[in-house]
Length: 189
Image (cartoon, rainbow, N blue to C red):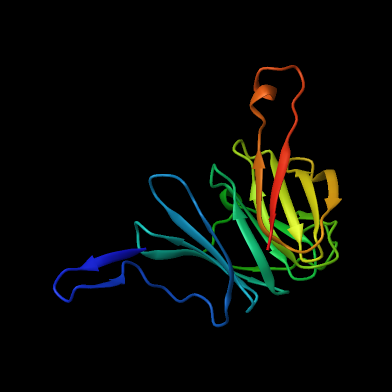
């Protein structure tokens, strides 16, 4: 976010923070009156930053590099796409910490809920408007649509190339029909 500096007639940074030591791989923004920025990096960290409070709310350290991130519209769950394929889910209301270490590679009962179905880096994530579906696209061109509550894969497919944008859109005619369908729109990079 930028703000104009009228005295020097140049544009300066409105907010600046440096939670990562390596390149940022993805950024997700919330859409509410208290905007928050979720960022993830190649240095195995993710950070949730409040623009209104001007502070880092949560710092997450992971066991693998993070390639993508998303936050649901209700701002209660964070999704982190890893460089090895699994997507980790964090419930923000269950956390009572400002710093957290996350392990995605173990299958123990106390580990985080994960969406496993990709074998390459998950480069794009998107959550639909009611927070029930998650779309994930990987570097090999495969995508999956997930039910968030059950963590079941509803649909998979592939395209040639990698994804630059993944977005869930409800088709208008299905809002009034008996059958609910969804579409995943992906733009090739």
